[in-house]
Image 1 (tube, one colour):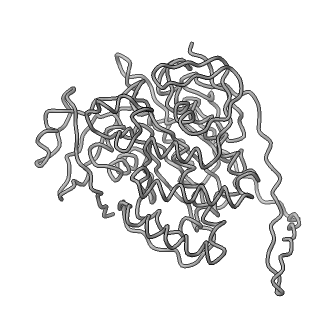
Image 2 (cartoon, helix red, strand yellow):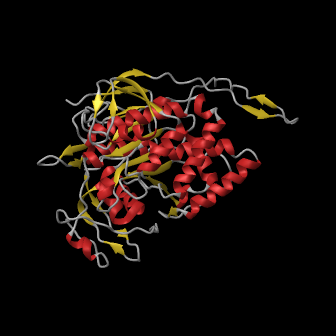
Image 3 (cartoon, helix red, strand yellow):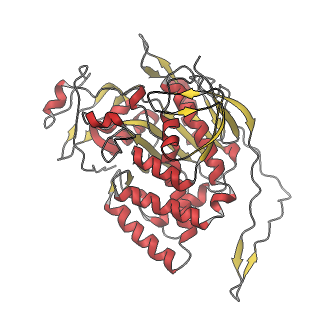
Length: 453
């Protein structure tokens, strides 16, 4: 499959020698390796990324029903196409409706200081350059029946990075052992896509990357997300200051919550991932609520904010995600998935000798990806967090669907009839029990961030 490459300058910092070096045209990188960023430079919002895009898709559904909406979608599509990158060929959808087949979308959050507010990120005053994918998430939407599985990849996980296309033509050499968060620096979003494809065996059709300011602005547009913390948090690295209890986080505070790792769980990126999954689960529940889906002004605000983040460089989309018709098709496929069928998992890992880095546990991961390839439901058997970051404290109640209306021949809306239950029940699918090495939760699980052990 052919893949393009966006304009991306390779920037590195002094560090340990790479296991293999990039090819001609990147002489400086031959003797340097990207430096991992921890604590102060921790990762931006994961689901802000996922739901920034999915929320925008849902918004397109709502606003494309009139002359103003049609014009806006056309103008937004033009803006998105002008700022997109290519990760492969994409056939345009023939008609509006739920997308056929499954969907695999990669969403990353990067640590670039470009365009960031130095008041919120003081270290950007002395930034040495480089942009890494500190949050990497694979969103899998199954074929019918629809289920969503979101896989988070620890940024410190050591993986092979395949040969990636270079800016001026040619390609960078493959590397056998690098942290996964260096893939974006070597080859931008297309390189991170190739890296995750090689690791998982999953073909990725869609991809997006978001920076810190984009996270903050999307948080404001959504109107905040509810989270729980079991103990007071005061983190000097991110600036987060929360008392024990429930909070509705917006803007910069939401980003701080998603970046934090000091003071929670085991203080690692593994604990942070589960903290992020708490946030994502809560965000899913909010997006499915009437407060968002039944509020055209909120949906329109989400969509306009997403487009503005693309225009100012805070959100990068693959070419395949810039077609409004395709966005609508994906949105229609996920908008009614039950909480229990939206599963957030962490790619299973073990600590490398000496600690500090983690290695993939591929035998456990293969159970997950084989189940996804076979379109089978999965069942969690492990803990909610591999890094002790959260604990399950309850179960969310699935909201009752709001009756929709269709237009009659006279033009006046009439309620849609609720279909009668089938006399012959569908055969029950047997869920694949995931190894307990795979931590995670569903959107139905209400979790609470735990203090550092």
